[in-house]
Length: 405
Image 1 (cartoon, rainbow, N blue to C red):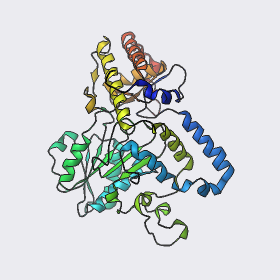
Image 2: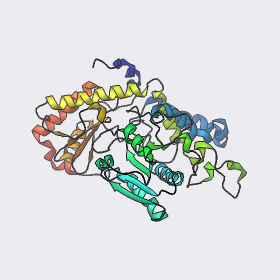
Image 3: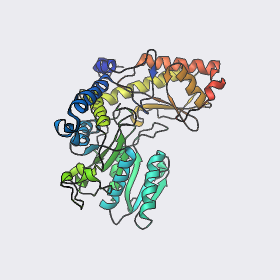
Image 4: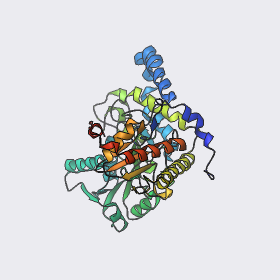
């Protein structure tokens, strides 16, 4: 691993993660594990703050500002300005806010272009906004990603894309796509859910207009933890169409008419979960001593090592890797296209190798620079090779599907 910063730079962080004995966790692209700082932070919030301060906690512990203060913690991870990120609601709700703001900023343009291979939830939100506003105010076109190379953006209000393809794990050229779309007057909205915490995104340096993401994947904020929203300072005059009480300029005046708060604060809507935001805040503490460049270097090293292991193992060398082998063109997951992918995933999980499956035949290995290492990847490939050789995955018990795959 020559050429990368010393491995022990992350050793202390790795030791803080709770992991069941014998488990190798390769599903950080879906849900990160629990770090000791989060358990401790939640105890403080629940016992010392809520338990002792009750309603006074809103002032004594500044709960009311958590969406902004947690946003400030997120900002350096995303390469954003301190006042350009807010942590609240969910990715989907923040996406709705961004798309609506983009239509307002870029009026009279009313066309949203998204990729047909996008995470479906993002496209559902765009379609819902179009149905609400009607074709005269919003039209959504979902096109194959490769068609963007020749697409005319001259009538596009907002281009909505994923930074990392959630199925294949390919990393999109954020700087170039952003530059080209903006050159024709379009705003660009990136979903960075699968890159935040593992890719050096550099939103501000790349003049990105808007971005959304979630905190429960590689940021380890806990199951269902809040989403986040980035809006470049130059666009923060836009209106939050979900103009709730928390986004009011003077919440406790209880005025009958709405007046937007300044900056990102206007993009809060309702009361946020103090407990959930406290968990995210504690999870982000572990990122304070590492830079996005360090995380990216380690992520690239680990994913390269995993591909090398697959290629040199006879039972896995013939598998189709959907993820680009060039580390500059992938995120922090490796996706294999494999027949019987679901039962194979279940056989791996039974052995303590936690992965996930995406239809129709994709086995995903999410690799985190914070808690994964090379010996774990060796064991994962060895387990996969044995499962393929013995064909144990054909056992009926591995065919049973739960609600979540």
